[in-house]
Length: 196
Image (cartoon, rainbow, N blue to C red; front, side, top):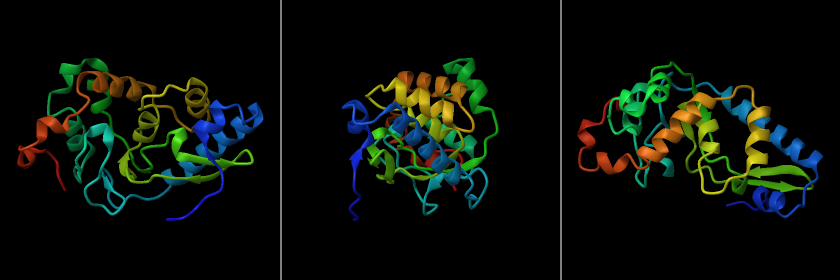
């Protein structure tokens, strides 16, 4: 474990420790780091896996590890508990039938996991969910959580190279209707489609 100087961004942001210029600078720094991660080459296009290409973990999907998946289609079927996408409406159907690049993703890029010092990012911590995911996952996961910080989310969304608003809408539908797909899969692991 390593020590990093600074305060978590959520505390600095909410307690008024940052000027508007510092907030904008931090948002642009984080967007730049995301851009760097996205340039890493995946070991296999379409894979969904941990940083070590093994089972991944993400509290968005439940409390157990999952995968790895050899395709985004298998991953999408998994997060829908193998329910046909049409069941969730046109937005989920549309997004789960698109083709996406595989990108290296932190997968929990919330202000609580970004350390700042003197108005700059000093570290991004808590990489336990990190891995290889469809390109939209970083964007949608940055919006997943109990605390709404519109100024942060809007600033980051506008600073990123690409927004995934359709995918965010589709994910929000799944969050509401099927927040824990792993409950369905418990005891049926042998039926999970698309495992690597």
